[in-house]
Image 1 (cartoon, one colour):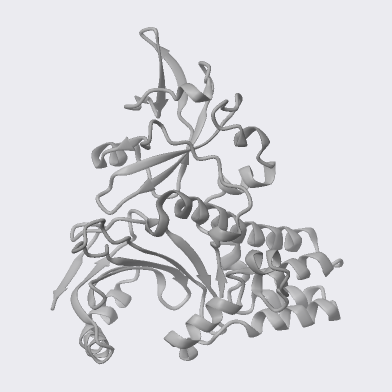
Image 2 (spheres, rainbow, N blue to C red; image 1 turned 30 degrees about the vertical axis):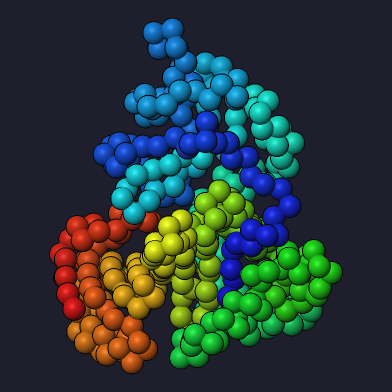
Amino acid sequence: MLPSADAAALSVKPPVILLEGRLPVLEAPAVKALGLHDGQVVRPTVEVREGQLVLTLRGQVLPWPVPNDLRAIPGERLAYRVQIDAQGVARLFVLASAQTPSAAAPVSATLPQRLEQLMLRPPGMESLAHLLRPGVLPALLAATPQPEVGRLVDQLLRLRPSMAQLTAHSLRHWFAHSGWSTEAHLAQGQSVSGQAKALMRQIQAQWSQAPDQVMRLLSEAVDDVEAAQLQSGNEVINQGRDGWISVMLPFADADPVRLRFKGGRRGRGAGDEAAPLVIDLHTRSQDLGEVWLNTRIAQATQVHMTMWAVQEDVVQRAREATPALRDAMDDAGLALLSLQVVHGARNSDEGVSAGDGTGRLVDIQA
């Protein structure tokens, strides 16, 4: 398994700037009108309107002032990362000024270019998912064999579980031993041999006979891991346990699955309950097509699920399997309170409600 966030291991914090203790906010209607989605990087332009500096995005003036600390000039474009909550409200994190670094946040002037590139990388981990599909690495190696690289590829492939092997215990084991804490182990002087990210870097360094397109794929796969580490670490730094953590879970007999999860912090009051644990899943499978699953677990046992599937037969199979799923959850001490199955693609990476999605809606209430 290839995890993608270890906030404790980050040696340099991303250049996130808080404006008077608050982040710029866009309400749900404005988010929809602008076509924003979670994890997106947008670059509004600094313009002069009626003698004032404003930010415009896709022709619309954004409802907050230009940050004074950035010393922005007309025509400059500022980079913001979009984060959308469950209500569809977007908060925007300043990443960097395109031209003039902030006097209040000099890290943007000294931040290595590598980190800036990773912060602006799309969050989908598409190159990593392609590399870890069953058969891809063996086929690439067969085309350009190298014995020492073959041994490393075998090590990497052995880290992948089969679907039948996946249990809660084994998931915790693979999570702990397949790269999650690579940087933390390095910082403590510990060995990282046999961990997925370290193996990919070794393959990249030793595969001298590989063609350029293979080296490019390996490089982009490593970039996917490190970008997700940095981006998730950014959220954890700014939101604590409310931040999303992303994981790419490869299988020996199925296409990789991308997981995102977060556990809400307990409120400040003595009787306040913790926010639900939220788990997002996404896969693009040859057998199932594209599938998304959003699971919310409240009070440790109360489960609400929403599933999106592009293929109609997958929707029907999910509908038929609901009683068995409910029984399995009962056996595990969980209560499936609701399951919604949407025939269509998911509109957003985050934030679901009963009416989200497109196409037919199958709403199965417990």
